[in-house]
Length: 292
Length: 262
Image (cartoon, rainbow over all chains, first blue to last red; front, side, top):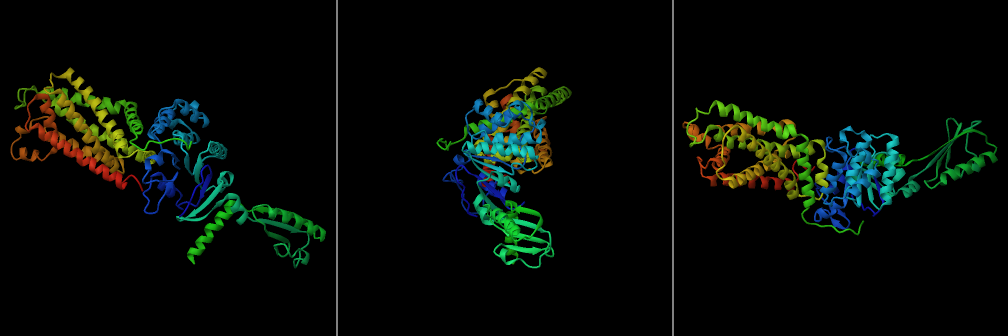
């Protein structure tokens, strides 16, 4: 695996369960002993300069893990102290307010809802103002509303200049937030690129025209389109384009050409490929290659 | 943010944060951490001190109550130091909160100052309370107060280190309890807490000398009564050797990540 992260970006590491996402994060953060290779952060080797590097990194693990009986504010102060920062009540208040935890600061953590507990995890990770923040499955098991809320929080962090590496198997999450995406499976990095570049390169559009009367062959006037007849000639199916909108444009032109050629259709269904399809295709393709 | 400077030396704030967090945890559970051992020790003093006051020979002129005070202090010191430290490091392992310790800029030194220091400090607080309570129940004096304090600090540190190793080793609550309950407490009871080793008939007197706790109880008893079965230097030496062995094991654990890192 060879992976470089740019300062200030949100990098999403996608992969199925057991792909190695958490292990990779653990290796950077000191939770896992790497068996080989080297890892640098801020230009420093993490083994040699572990103290300095760790002061600048924050981690929000997947599991809710803290002293449930302690109060919110004490746990956040504890995290700040453990990372070597001087007490700063104003900063603690700022962090808690940004995560809507200020009113809950004196509550024992065990009394908070699941979503609030997850926010406490983020508050603890932010207490020492990390320059690089790892979010391991930040929205795993949270409801849609809270997920949107979390995304807004993460975007706010990026606005402050924090570099964010998040792992997720919610493709929607990567699609919504990430600047760049890496796809990992079985410890191998399958792909790393800008999200928009991946969509452009691997994205497709699929359009199904439901024809008023079945056709036997594609008329020559439409032969330059990537189309086929399916369902006994009752459907004209377009599969083409890329993730830049080319597919949508071609489908619109195809609709006009069908009208001009007096080929009537009674319905139209279009589908843009998502990052999820690209991801699934990539993983399946790699598994087929390995099996071969 | 990138313009910040970072100190790459010892993270004393981190060590203090752990220390404070551990002490706060003890005060949150004041009954189990403090009141329970104080009450138990007081009951030993009342029951054994009163019941056997006139039946125990060879106490070097001390009353039986005064004789058992150092033994009971050692009993509490060993069990509490061990369990405080083992519980302190085991709980984050159990809840998963250990991730924060492993990802923070704290090494073996800060971790030991934090966890072991807090466990030892809790034991010292407990010892002070027990000594105060004991003074209400029996008459006793401390012949060498500074040496008593030094010895208590040494033993509490050594057994907090030992407890820390237990906490790292344990992968379940049962293992956490097994050494204190099945090894430490019996050895302490058999180590002269309630009687001088010199009153045992042979071969039990020789057998008892293989029990390292004997030298700890005897050492503390010397600082209180001024008399002992063994030289005080031997008690200090054994405790120091045990402490160095524990530090060596912990350094190895942190270097290899055994039971800490995947």
